[in-house]
Image (cartoon, rainbow, N blue to C red; front, side):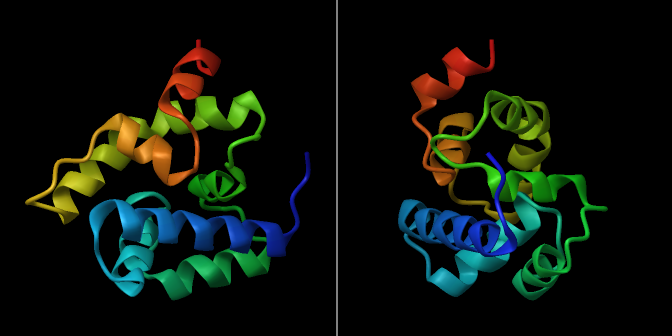
Length: 119
């Protein structure tokens, strides 16, 4: 399945909304946090600019294509980068512990599906 820039932007917006709801934080704060912890960007604006530019120098941008019906290789990529994501989350959020299941749910994926598909 191939996604265009608009699909990638919509996925990122949904990811930020899920993160906002999960952590009970304002959407703007969730957008900034998502940009840093998942995509390694300095800001949400930078993330959006990179997605619009078709520049995939940042390998984490592939996660913008991750959604509940995504191909397994995207889930495996997330799994490979999971420790880095968790580390950046814990660096950014002190009072709330984020675990692997929480990260997976940001992408709209059931943790049990994730576990079965990364094997």
